[in-house]
Length: 415
Image (tube, rainbow, N blue to C red; front, side):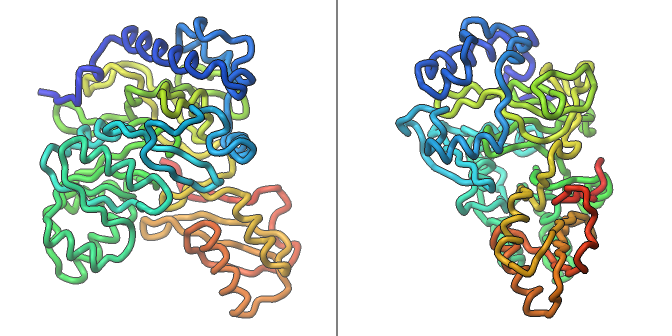
């Protein structure tokens, strides 16, 4: 018999939409008097937001625009209540974009995805997402604790210490990027360490190609993935059918109104058509209305074999812009330009993202007339400081890079 996190997952679709739109109207009405919201919702009374189709009248908010708005009116551009009552933590993500965390239990909503991944109350969870400045670690930490799971706040890196923690606490569940799970499994095998307690994993923040999923599951770890962003928390998650097999696509979280729009516009695409993911979350602490994520996906038609009645998307299908998510962190073309500006020897620069040995890799190609090791090391250090990720640097002759306006070339396979 199928197990569900709560009754919301199996309610009638019409009931779900009415509840979501009612919550959205209340969130908009609560902030309608603020200057920022008046400018965004000019001529769109909250009372007229009755169905999902009505959202198309509201302008899409893009990350670049949000960054500028927050810089002009800290901390949250006037798009959230001015007083930080009900806020527990304050974060920053690359951009920079600033996000709050509400005080309520599982404010990010990830307990639902953890439960769908087969993680149960009392399971010890090894959390390898970072807890420093960015919300990643806390997004999964809160969900696991709301589910009744003790959490090891391990963070990323330090394989030896992680193996010690696994050996001592015997966690059943792993959360983190799929790449790092493979790194841990490889390290344990090489060192002859027993980490067979790991049976379940909820992964996100990096691509999970079929080959990597098959390898991880072949080594005894049942893997499911979720799609989460720092602005709203959980967006969608994988589920299993009655037989325990993976169900195609991802269920949209119950808190999220999700649209697929034509990239560069706010216009919804046709059924099954690939477009940009736009999310709305009616939260009184930090309402997010029609935020364009820059991610590509498409709706799947028909009911899910898992028995849940919400909408499904195909999952992450690439980026609508030149931003790239590398090892769980977004890299923006502006980041590449910041590296270039700090080294006057560089003409043009191009960041190439690939995969090797089931891991994301970055190579920064720079046009310059100098190529000595000290220069290469200095540029690599700047790249790491700006993006918080390591990558190799290759110097090429001036005029070598393609003159196509592309700053980030994501050459990883999709699917």
